[in-house]
Length: 415
Image (cartoon, rainbow, N blue to C red; front, side, top):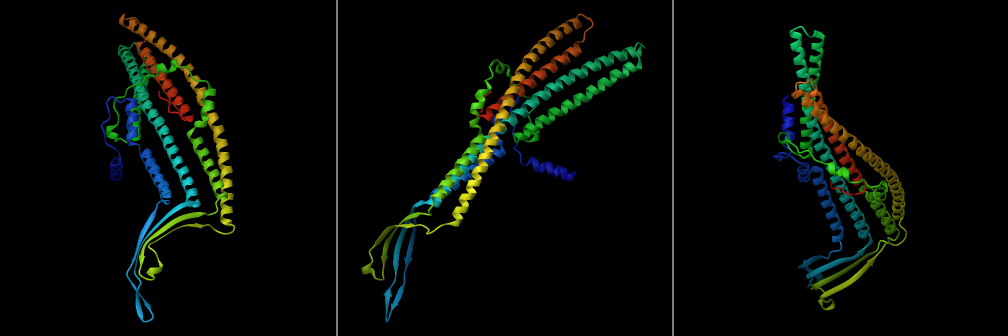
């Protein structure tokens, strides 16, 4: 028990303590997720690191300089000759094929890291939205559970009164008591779900458990269903902008460039250098500066280079197969989302009609209750609230699916 308490304390020390806005909106949650997301911060550091590595390759073309100072004598038979010198050496690499290959490889790594960051942002947005919607649905479920509990408790009370005057059997009373106890269990579960969903969102936001959101604002997406859903062909054409597909295509292009560079790689290195200064020994035969350009390249064939080209060719074929597979997978996933959206739109229409029916029925039940006419107002309230929950859940599923579909085509669709 002490160990568990210590563990909880240790975990809580790594989360951010911040008072959330109350009530909390989805926009607030998404904004907070941008500020406190560990994975995104880590990936930004990775991007920064890859950028520095690219700079390291580019810096190899910078001018380098060093000073060579020597105070010395040298023997010349019986006399000592001044052998001191003072030189400044300057050197600059004008071209190096190995550096160019390394730069291109590193540039591809940097681009991949940037695309991975964008993918992280998309996944994070979906996760936050789902967690936020779950809180709203948990609250609606709790409201339904409370109404159900109240309904059965009233029924139990009435049967108990009848039982006391021997107008109802013990079996009937036990039946009502059982329903009340079951509805009590439903209420407890719904209450637990409220806590669990809020804790989950707090975890995603890197907020301490004590600061988890209390009240949330229910988003309204009714206007979204008034917009026509684009034809599937629209999404199919734009699947080429998928982030993962872009990443694979960039990798394939990079491999192609590496193959081309390796085939033309003669190991050429072109340097320029200069030396400025004086020396004591044979001073009259040496001027104060020297400058020149040096070209170097290996002579003969390079078995290692041939092996590298073969390995790159294999990588290219593998990457092409990956691209073809993901293109098929994306097409199937996009079609599933589009068909699901069409179904959710139809369900939305049906639930709107059902909600209107529940509303009218509730008004009728309320009127009968006020006129002391037999009424099932409790059941009517439960049904109305439950239909509200089903409508909200359908709307949330639609928004999430629409968001996922647009993420597939590389878009951040604003809801």
